[in-house]
Image (cartoon, rainbow, N blue to C red; front, top):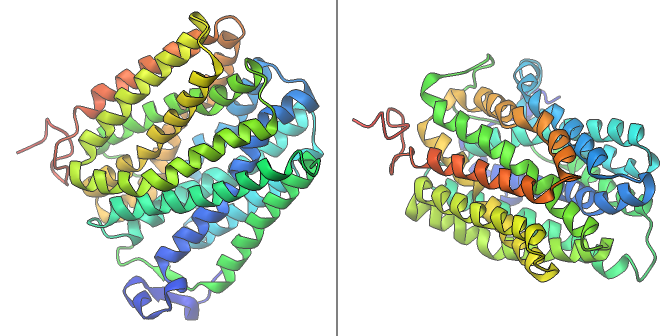
Length: 407
């Protein structure tokens, strides 16, 4: 943990070289996280089917277990009483890297549930702190565009790792163990560098270190709850469908993800600019309408036998719509008290994962009888999100959190 000599007020960070400033650290962490997490995701469906004989039931349970630490993200409030947020985020990232590195050592349901729980603690605690630091360190006026650039930087890191997988998986006959060790090791090395190379930045507004649940944030909480429920269908079953129904191999799944991140690199900065121009209300309405169409189309693949090309296109479009999720962050940044950001990030992450703890397992049982019904439920969830987005005012701010509180 840092001593007082390494603590630097945020306003003085401008005197540092660019590569040691807070925004560069956020971008560096945005590179480190997806190298481990997205490599884990790219190999997961093939690995669990080939090594552990998973069906929809087992993959549902795996993802339910993976989401438990997200539900317990409220524990961040306790940890930041004893550890600075920046340190906690970096330690959590290192934990994600180590757990990813050793994933292939446990090719059984019990082993995968255990190692997934450990990697998930690292991922969810990192994400909770990272979202808090982004909103504390980035000015409100620049937030949409800078968050768009951070998404693009993370997508570039994913692009490099996925590109390497596509080019080398079959060519060199790589093993799951080698790829997991490499990706996890790189993420761990980035975390170690970030820990020692940067001062501890002090935000101008001290964060509350208590549980915060405010009535005026209710719409943000509701949107987070629906986003968490809806996301599970995409994360758990969209890629699983490509492997189970269409027989995609590792390099083919990775190629599809590669396309996703090329698209994100191009469009995420533009999305950030669009959110700044249109506002969060219009951006989120656009996202949710698009997701309704995508999920209904996924269902059509099963009910009407639509083919693999449409499924692949939908997967890319689906991923692009989810990239607009940072509009929810900037909506909260505009309505929140500055000292509420850290504790509310933890509370919101817990709310986001309420459905995530049980929904993948439940949907896993539905999946084995009617996959199309799973996507129909997701479309219904996106419809609820759309109705909630209509309650966001055109210009949200403290005292104008919803259309009912204006004036």
